[in-house]
Length: 278
Image (cartoon, rainbow, N blue to C red):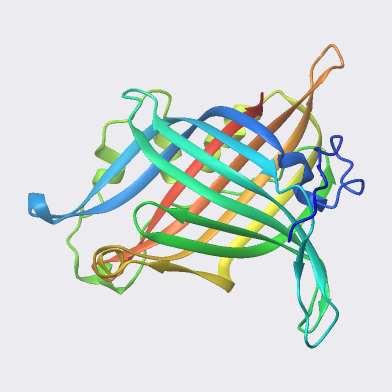
């Protein structure tokens, strides 16, 4: 049973006032633009793979569950979990074709003694390709803007050893969609840095989750055999941005990498976006 206790988003940078903890600032609707890079099998065209690049428009709506979710303990006392549901829609910016739909839940999990574990955050989601995700990590706040490191789109794995020179030519020859720079193909996170250039970000809440070592991805057999989604890593930055006139707005940036394995090669599927809370 979930108690009827409405939750509202915490003031920017002040997470202690909400049982949602580091997730509190997510509540609301966010909209903006981003980019998507994915290599997919291309057997139907007698090729190993093709590279798909998209400029995207995106909307995510987060809603607080509304009360405590009790997890019953046998080796320790019960714990109470608070969280948010979300629904993400990503469309190609040229065709408005829907390229990603994701319903899910974020959870704020308190520290426990059985097992002995610190407080954590959890992301659960389902993808209409036939994938279900559970990823765990942590959330924290820092003063100033985000520290965004490069992310490589380069495929890896033993399958590359037998391929000919120029096998990865699509990574340099594929036509770029509107707004995408060639530099983004090698490092998608550069798009995030370009989006915040010149901004005055006074506070950032960092949410980082991964499906390894705690969690995992479960796929339908077709996905497992043809392009197995093996792991996910994602970082979300919730940024408080101050305008020149002193007013503020909330901005959400994220980078996400899912590894797809086919042809004995690990292919990074990378998505990035910069969104504003509307």
